[in-house]
Length: 389
Image 1 (cartoon, rainbow, N blue to C red):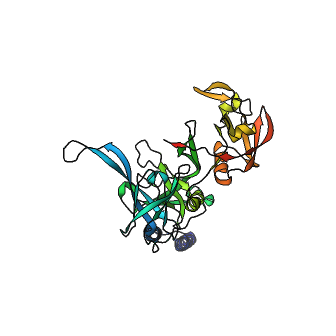
Image 2 (image 1 turned 180 degrees about the horizontal axis):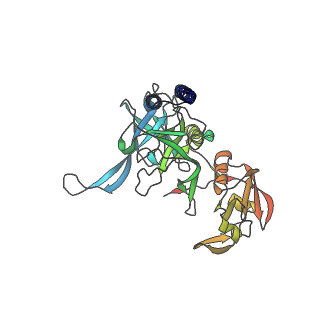
Image 3 (image 1 turned 135 degrees about the vertical axis):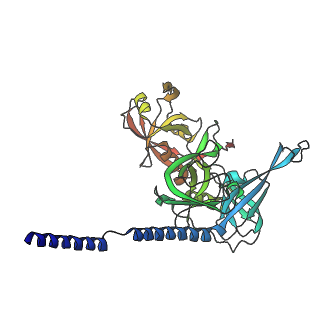
């Protein structure tokens, strides 16, 4: 009898403790579903609010470009020479004066630009300025656009991988299309439209990488954070088929502001120029240069004649070696700092020159030459007039 009472008391205690646990720590399936639904509803409402706030200020852009290309006749007759080609892209309201930001490649070469707002209002626009080096352009509508609010630009220096990324634009001429993803990479370099005098490509620094679905026609549209602020201008996708592959790039908002303000003020942008080409040090290159394996920096492969770098005495590769099947010049300087800011990658140097210097400014490069460190002062020039591909 005594043992039976003890077991009964123990059972009662376990039941009581289990009840307490259920009441205070273990959610029932119904409560879990309810919580998930609340989160989903909140997410949906956030996206709806951002779309309602931002979409009225996102525009579709249609341009006419003199072409002279042969087009097949849709009615079966012999094709004739078409005097124009048509193209489309996206953009967004930048200020209260009717300025619209878009990509340079959207409006480059156009003799007619048409802007359509989300409420189907259509206006002609003029090109204010184009900067091929950043692939940015500013156009201005020829009409009253005061009812459309300028979008707010965020500080792209504060972005982190994993942040929300939302795109609104005109992919495949489907205006007002919204997609979302995350910021999947930062400080990427992508090819600009401008080319160097030697045929190489300049790069756009600090591009924002995202997995938000972007397609042809999204170019020039805004990439947004979870507050509906612009963190970048959608610029290009990495894809073998020219459609979304989950790797897309946007020009960072801080660069957008710098370029757009300059284009509105002067109609053009003059970029500072050093006059070198090269790359980031690798383990193989370190071995060829007799450097410690953990050495980081920007390797100077070539120095362009009569460039600021050449005038300052910067040294490029003098001998050629084979690294993994590639012919590389060796013997050049390794830039490890610029104005005392560490340079670990070639992109660090490019970004500093693009974002923080002006023509005529003198910078100090800290270089490794023949295993010894020294400082070299360089007075930057203006980029030579470049051609486009």
